[in-house]
Image (cartoon, rainbow, N blue to C red; front, side, top):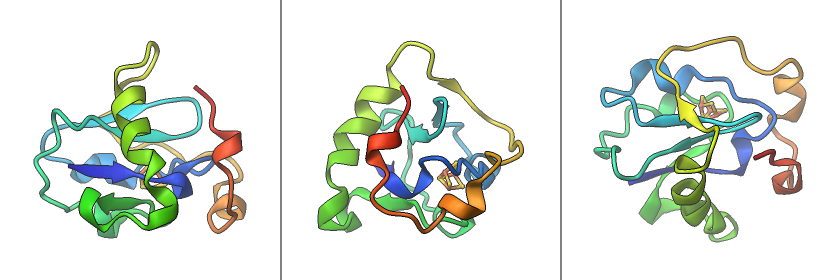
Length: 108
Ligand code: F3S
């Protein structure tokens, strides 16, 4: 599967959802995740993300491995709904794009 990592938090550019052929993105308050049961590993979303937040599971940086399980968990979490159309990024997305760490700011 592919995985949305920490860089998405407080950005949520949503360019990724427009190109997904299987509508596998799920939306939370300040981040998207990928439903691993739906993702077909086509990888078209990777270059679309302005924050470079999306990785193939096997290419995840060591400090991002927690997000594999987080994508599984949040894709099933209450209130995390399918998102299939791009919408405006969060207000301060460009300011948060390169800020790390920000996992503590994840809203569920
Ligand atoms: Fe997040 Fe990048 Fe998509 S910031 S919403 S993974 S385009």
